[in-house]
Image (cartoon, rainbow, N blue to C red; front, side, top):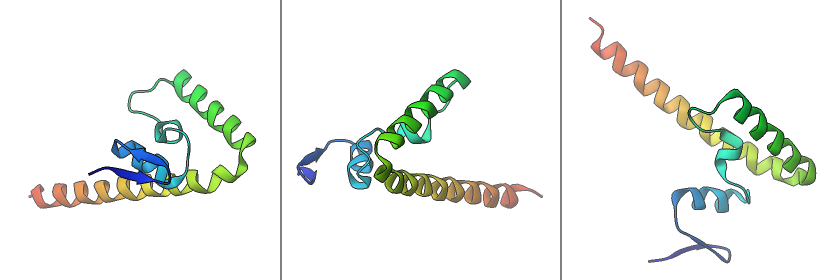
Length: 89
């Protein structure tokens, strides 16, 4: 079965996130990637600022993506804390 959002086909989970939020950019641009250097982070943030300056309406979907990422991180953090408490004598 094939999945589409609008006229775009969804091939990967990243495609789904990008298309569902209407970003038009990869989520990694806004969220970063594990192991990125300070120079890479600075370049990524500069690129994001330029994109938002050109398209201010993109701020809402980018904010939604950030909220989803924070919620997921908080879920993993809470799960990890419960696991540590369960193991601690």
